[in-house]
Amino acid sequence: MSRSYIYQMQWCIVEMMGAHMKCKMVGSMVDRRIDFTFDGGLPAVQFDASRVHSGLHLHAEMHGWEARLRDVAANKKTELERRMAVNALVTHYYSGSPDWSTRGTAMPSPVIAAIATKRGCTYAEAEAYVVSKLLDELSA
Picture 1 (cartoon, helix red, strand yellow):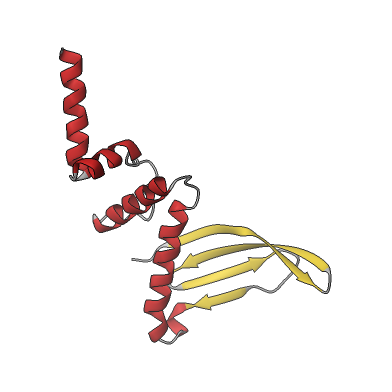
Picture 2: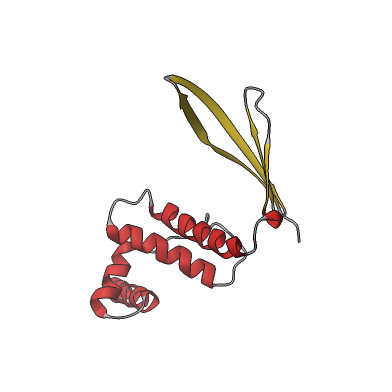
């Protein structure tokens, strides 16, 4: 199955001999090719992964996974939040889902994660424990 993606890359600033030039790089991925177009009349650049030495494919794949997992933790404030974000994405990918993003799914609670760590149990067990305690409290 062929997938097509279009994405906007960040603005880049090129400095040459004290002069600054801004370029907006827009890429589109179709199959195993990435096309980059630039503002300002600059010629497009095309990258075709099928033309790359096969020994580089695993390296590129692992680099991509590492970047993806680091990106999900980048805007978190604490180590616990970073760990939870990375763990949630790893769990998502291990689930067999074809979705690249977990957008729209609930992220795990750092509080429940801390309870799981303290009790030495899984996240799901800690979540069940908290729900049970809350229900007990409500029915008392």
